[in-house]
Image 1: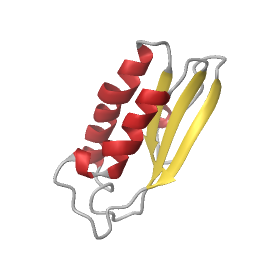
Image 2: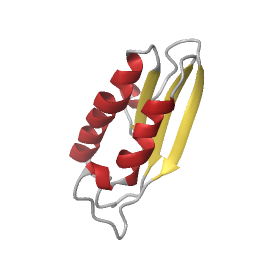
Image 3: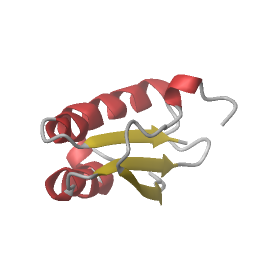
Length: 104
C-alpha cells in the first residue's frame, strides 16, 4: 500500500454502501490474444457494468503475483484501467453509479 500513491487508493465518494469485488488474477499458462480472451475482461467486468445498481459504490480490487507476464507491467495496467473506465465506470456513471478499480 505504501508504494501506491494517495491517488491510487480507493476512497468512498459519497454515502452509498461499498460493494468490494476482490479477486486474484493470473496469466500463468495463458496467453491472451485480445482482452476478450481474458475472462476478467471478457466476462466478469462486463457483468458488473450490466448488473450494478444505484445506491452502491463498486470497487474492483485485482491482486496479481509479482512477475506475472500479463499483469505485472505498469503500461499494461494503465491500459487496463483505461479499459475499465471506458467500458464499466463511464457507462455506470451515466446512471449515477460509481465504479473504481485497483490492481495490487
